[in-house]
Image (cartoon, rainbow, N blue to C red; front, side, top):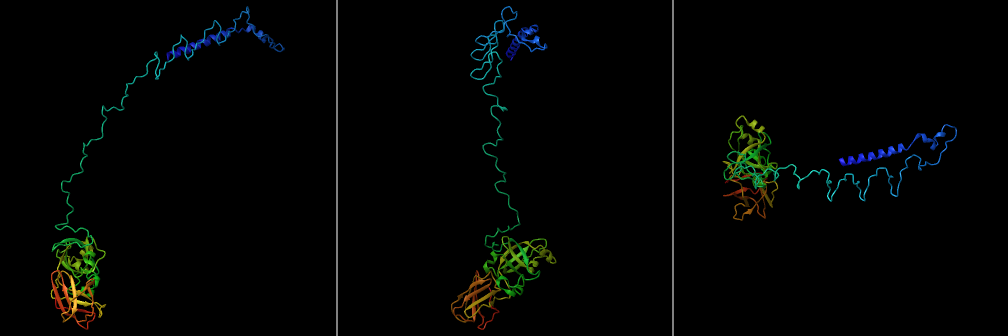
Length: 393
């Protein structure tokens, strides 16, 4: 930078000398030579010949320019430029740049950097890594070799949700489900229901202790007439089981809701005097198990369906003891003829095309372990009513 200042001072000095020489060559007393003396005389100014700088004039000769622009002798020479821009021999050389940008030899060197610029910021030879968990990530929370047990519902776990078949209560074992009630508070649910028992549900031996069952338990009517013991465990419950008979279907039940009890059955589970409090609960947890039906002093009854005629017979079979019918057959009474199998029509109603068989009728009944024959049950002049046999399981 000092070299540049020296050059600037030299240039200023040169122009100062040039200005001084120009001023010195002008003399006011010779202004007439330029026609200044005629100013104010009323005559137009006259101009003489061009200034004469000949010998003897006393004036220094004007600068002389040669073929190459320059100044005459006696004046300081201007800076000399070579073929490449530069300064004269007496001036400091300009900065010199090599093939790579740099500074000249007389200038301070630029800041020096190492071959490898510093890292920013430096953490040493190895930058920090994210938190290390080792070659294997941490295991999830350990609950031990055995997962925690599910919520306990007592000694007997609840059945899993139904997949279309009724949960099994085992052979005499208790299972857990939920129960509601329907119909009148002290009634029999609905008269008849989908099993076809009609008003028999209100009379002994059913005596309104009946229930509607979920579709799996109802099982297309095969569940009609089956018996279950049901007991509840809330603070209003007596803890004593009540035996109920399936006489209806509960299409709205399902999953862990198997029973829709009659009002009478529901109240039967309560402590004396707390029947209403229990019914106010609406839905309660209960335990249940399948049991053989037992109607002491009652024999199997056959109610003739109104659709029956000389070619077709349908009967609702009621009050059979045991664990439910698995087969029914009919034949003409007082003969050794073949038994004509009947099929389940709906609910507890069995049917058959008579194929020439005429009344009176006898029936053969079969459950899971026993067969009984009810002779001469339906007379030849039967009507659409109920006929009681002299047998039961």
